[in-house]
Image (tube, rainbow, N blue to C red; front, side, top):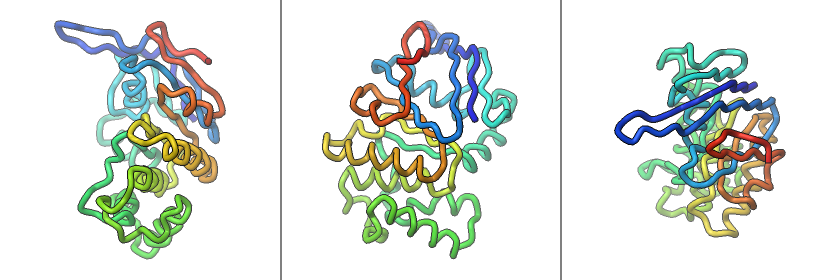
Amino acid sequence: MLSIRNLSKSFPGPRAKTILRHIDFDLAAGEYVAIMGESGIGKSTLLNVIAGLDRPDSGEVRFDGVDLCGLDDDALTILRRKHMGFVFQAFHVLPYLTAAQNVALPLALNGAPNAKMRQRVEALLEAVSLGDRGESPPRELSGGEMQRVAIARALVNRPRLVLADEPTGNLDPESAGQVLGLLRRCVKGEGAAGILVTHSAAAAKTADRVHVLTQEGLRPA
C-alpha cells in the first residue's frame, strides 16, 4: 500500500536542518506500525510527507502505486479526503459541532447522502462506546471521549490508511491505554493500515511492529 524510498527532507533558512535522511519504509494493507523517536526528531514531519502535506527534497512516496510527489495540491487533497484518516494529539474536534456532527464532517465534505451519513456515524459512535453521546458538544466530553470522537471521525470514510500523531499525549495513563486499544481494534476492524507516531514504548507495544526514527534514518526496533 505504502512504499517510501530514499526520502530526505530539510528545512531551509539561517538554521537549515535536515530532518529526514534516506528513509526507506513499506506498509502493507492491514498492518499497524508504530514509529518511535525522541521529540523533535521528525516523526510528525514524516507523517506530513506521507500525507502529502509536505513535499520531500528527494526520494519517492508511493501510495497504492501512485507517486504522491507527482500530484498537484488539488489531487493530493482529494486523495487525503478519500483514502486517509488522521488522529492528532490535540483532538481537533470542532467546539461548535456535536460529537456526531464532528464524526460526520468528512462524509459531508465528500457529499455523502444524509441517510448513509447518519447510519455510518451511528455505527462508528457505537464502535467507540459513545453511542449515547452523539448530541453532546465537546465541552461536555472528557479528553478520552474527545479522542474517541477523533478516532471515529478518522475512520468514518473507511480510509485505507490511518495516521495517528501522538494520539495519547494529552491523556491520563488510564484513558491513554483505553484509546490505544480502541485505535488498534478500530483500524484493524475496518481493514485499514495504520501508522502510530509516538515516543512512548507502552504505546508502541500495541502495534504489529515498531520502527525507530533517528538522525541516521528509520530502522526496525
